[in-house]
Amino acid sequence: MKTHKRTATLLGASIAALLLTSPAHALDADAAQALAKKNDCFKCHALDKTKKGPSFKKISAKFKGKSDAVDKVVTNITTGPKVKLEDGTEEDHKIIETKDKAEMMNLVEWILSR
Image (cartoon, rainbow, N blue to C red):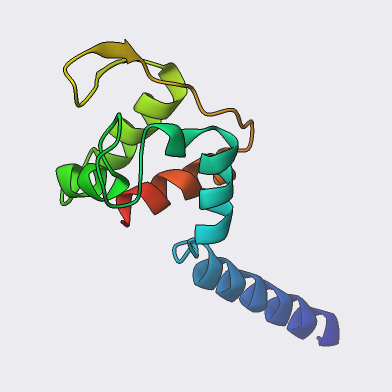
């Protein structure tokens, strides 16, 4: 009986931990900015002003409320598609160099939260 109670308590604690941590992933802005800096994102993008590419604020506004926002940004930073620059020219978008999916998703969340 004592083992059964301990198992139930551990199971309950595990489920509670899973429910409390999974959906509420905390955005790590410092890590996102560090990854953006490491990949030279700030060469073309700024937080709130247009450079060679749109600002992160403008990107966020473009995707606000769209159900495919995360997918679109992930595709853009992982496949290197042709992008139209502010001056009308086109070039291949740089691919983010990270093998850590969580790190990349944190960057995407950060971009969309501007």
